[in-house]
Length: 239
Image 1 (tube, helix red, strand yellow):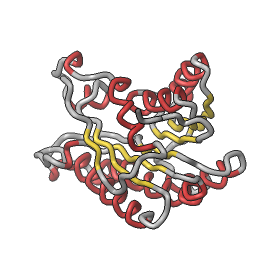
Image 2 (cartoon, helix red, strand yellow):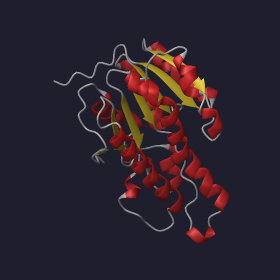
Image 3 (cartoon, rainbow, N blue to C red):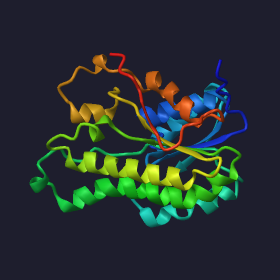
């Protein structure tokens, strides 16, 4: 049986105040990792922190606005003051944007989606790379969407940003090919989240799994026994 114990490891998760990010953070903490939770809303982070600590886990809260790209450069040096290495990085934070024809989209909003879904992850790679490589077996996982495999009308902002994120992750994986770092992508499928409800307001949420149900798939990509690099793990549909 695969051992997913994460004792002694440090994990950073973005978008950790709710949804998939919160579920992954709680699971990694349950497995023994000290989790660093990043999101804009301190209230949401505190709620997740309460759950983690009530279950005996350890967490550090870092309220951070990922839209403020220039401020992200200081994250790595700040973390280094307290953590000599970063074993796991989960790039989960994202926004949907507007579903509309390309000609109707506002350039400023398109750029905003690209900034959060792509540029923030690039800046995070840039600042966290030394810490990830300082870990014996650094792991990075970026969360994508099946929309990149089924490009459809009106999904321009989200689809383009996620396709770019996948390219970014694969380039980073190639750059880490001769190291102990493994960089992969996870497509969680159709999950009951606030973003899913925004995209499909008429859908019955009971038809979709909760974030906690799909979170265990992340364990396949963050453990020392992970051999995948530059690949995409798609969570199979269960409903």
